[in-house]
Image (cartoon, rainbow, N blue to C red; front, side, top):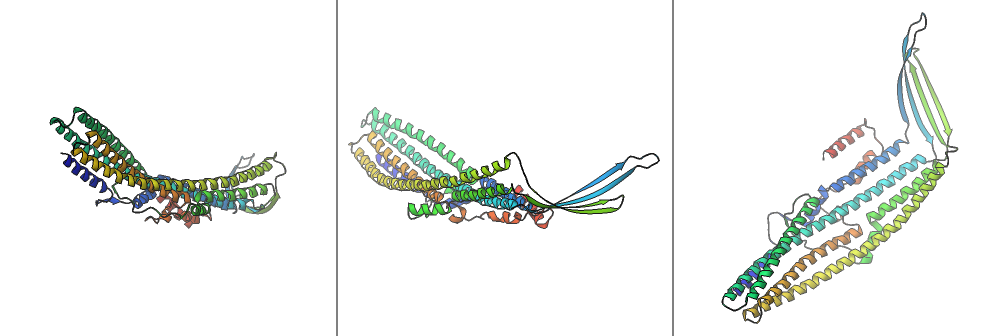
Length: 458
């Protein structure tokens, strides 16, 4: 009977080993999961829409550089005097206003909003990194929990057969009732662990569905870890040069400085022109006037001075934020590398543990057939081997997740850097279409309207 149990254990180990390599019809790679997350993420759709809304801020600022043309049509009713007749007269008035010079206040506004567009683009990259990192964790969690479930299932089968063997040996007087009870207790524990493993896998599958947009099929283990920097110092240099969080903070500093310029220009005078044309349908007369206005505020209760100071302090705060973000990025790289080193060392140690536990397990089994070991000894050895295999699965998962976390800490966990098979979103396309503030009735405006209707349908 024990030899049958040994054969079962070997078969179970083969089943577990085959989880990552078996050929199936719908195998999915980690790249497939990342593509699904990139293409179905609601968070990315939200951030892209917010970016397009920020692009429109530039268009609105540009429109302030242009004339404002308005019209008004009036009807005037005249009450008749004695022996007179009542009348209704209409008039049409067109007015055009244009700021000729304001010491650059409106231009400061345009440039400030351009910087905020660039900052928002970097925020979109950060959101993309978060989504892809979550997809990596979801993929590896499903693989880990699937393999652990297979281990637990095999463990239940193995202990069931050992319990059967213990009962047979009890019947012939080779073991005591205690041996049978120990096997029964271990089987009940194994079944509890199996139920927990099923629950963990169900939870992991739901997370995968949420992130990737579909339930997982047969997930294939990554063949290799992603390429990162050669050293922690190199990774920090890369991160402090191009990390999206840092670039976003730097663009916010530039926008804040431009806002200071706009606030200072607001206290200076403005030169503007106003043209008016009026037509009266009673007298069939038209009049045209052109007015130049030059003036500015003299006293507004200290509001303008307060606005300047406020803008200056916001610029100071933005600069301080650059230092904060730089420190956080540097720390993040250090933490990610420490986690990767730890995960790699853990995986290597667990591999040695499995080899030793396998030898011990086989030795205890052989000794048990000779009567030199008890059923409890066999169960303990089998449990140690199971725990080692489960630890190996978790260690491999941790190492892969940690490697991608290093990429994220460097600012490189993007669809473009990973060369995913997706149509990478171009943040400049919409901006280029709206930066000159096309009107709704223009050809470009009508094309934009079609694009927006398509986006809303999606």
